[in-house]
View 1 (cartoon, rainbow, N blue to C red):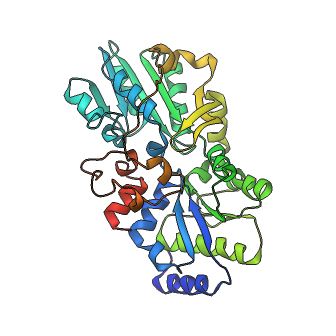
View 2: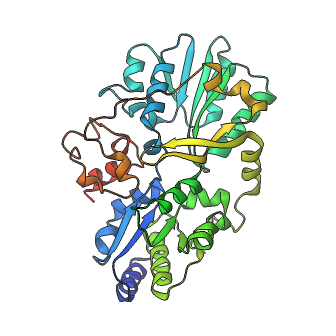
Length: 356
């Protein structure tokens, strides 16, 4: 983390840059939370707007998939495992969630890694164990490792319900949306540790947009924002790495190879963005025995979205949390309507907690 004096220097340097109205987007939930907690948005000049994008894995999961998970949880002799945030995400019916289903008798367990779910399957062979795969390139390699381990250890009662997604197609979809305007991206440091600096070259090469990969401490975020704004002021568009201690140009080749070995890319639905081609990680055909969607014939059906919820607009930069008519009234962390108020990386949860 940079010193306080250095942070003040960066803020002064940002204020001195000759730029007009500028919109920057972060596409990482950890950045969203850190920006809100540190008050960075309010420290920047008024003509610089920080916008939260689809960086929260739980938030981009569509309502149809959440409802399918809720129904899956009720199957007899099944243990549903996943990360804690997923338990409180509401279904299309207010008050329905995995926590409620657990109260109704479903065996729903919080795990801290997919390998924990695999261990449960090994110790309880009479039950089917499903792991809910949520996340981007950051968590996908660990999930792939669990599938590989299940195959190697001959564990047949373990399967994956993959809702894993790839960041690049979503960023492309945002840029190519007619009513969307952005001047640069604060690129996600966690994803970049896997796909590397080169994983974001498409921003500059295909769209002429600058991007800076940033760390997560307030001072690191300010440095990344300064570099990003400096590029804009100079009319340049390149990808810079302001998080070199963790991110290499080529990323993590072993993790990338693991993704290629286990998954293929397929169309996936994103909240607020609709179906995006080649944006979802699904198991390859040779690993289909571990695919929970096929094992349990899971199909996502159409649902009626909660009236008034604007999560889809919030995570695509079209609306700030406080502009949602339910924010802080009909939707709070204690009684959430949408996933952006539930997840620890959700834009609405961050805005509510830190009054950002």
